[in-house]
Image (tube, rainbow, N blue to C red):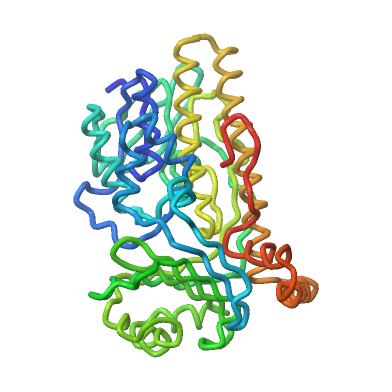
Length: 400
């Protein structure tokens, strides 16, 4: 089998890459390791900002409104330090229209899969990739249990354990934070709250001074609580323990609404390069970078990765020749690596506030908390903990 472009991975970033290629006049083929009917529980990548929504709308008209309709726009964001509110950001109707949407990853994936089917993009399910072999003429994709496929280009969107990245010889560089978290998805009560607000607590007094994040989405809530060590991570994630501490942060009735529980650690890793030495493989999403989930930088930057990769491939196909291909693909790799570095640095600012690793860092946080009583600047700075650095990266592919 020979294809022009293969997309490896049918998560939200891989599906976006396929739609972006189709919008450029190229019909890709998607290969996904999992079965089509595999259950995909959990909110996971939960928030899509406005710029990525606009990108999606350009490649699949109507997608922005579809995801907004299936998601939720928060009424406000509230921040607390040891139980005292120090900052609030309200969203009026105008801001709500341009902010973004809180939508579970499974909902996003379903909408993107529908768009791919409507566009005539074929997906091969239950097709785990065993490796890629790349040369100047193309890419041979080896599979477990099926014949190899030849492709002119491959978009590696196969996630954090990317086989494409590893077998193309591209390294991840960076570090792992000691910060550990438990995630709980909660179904909504029959009587929904009148307002849906994101709330973040530094050192919540009701749960032993642990950090807590509460994010509403349509039909439920995501609750993240920080654990201090691996033993605590296991303990806090058991159903019995969740029911013991949950009433300290939310209505006790949510104890009967637990839908999904998982755990994670903060990774800050970026691919050394976003392409291989032959400029035939282009990495996007978590195949190329791993950030702490707070701030939504992973999926949002992955959507821009996908659009940029599709543009580089379309230009390369239109301008054949090794040197021209290297120029075009290298431009993609440099720009998206710079964006990933910016996002990793931005996320690191938040990690340093939420889980300071030094005495100096802890003193800085206490100082900001004290000044936040009278200084709006200090309050804004402290609110960056769960979001990372405010604002975005100026550059040719946007802020992500």
